[in-house]
Length: 59
Image 1 (spheres, rainbow, N blue to C red):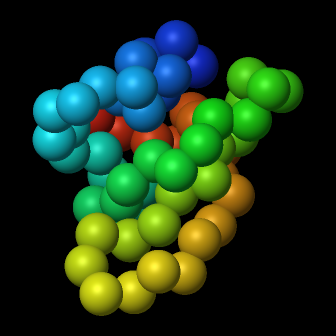
Image 2 (image 1 turned 135 degrees about the horizontal axis):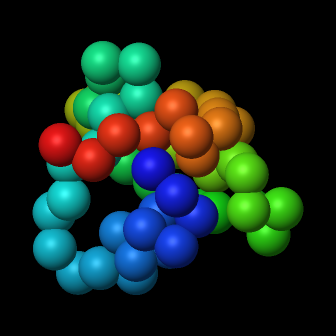
């Protein structure tokens, strides 16, 4: 995924399915460096991780 698409998904009111290494995640924020984003798993866990935007995949 690229930075612009990650920003679009973040601001979208729709439910866009995004995966990080075959796991569904929510994008919480996109960092200004344009290379990383903060995500958390879909589901009951709220653990957040900073990951490379290149590793995110829109399904």
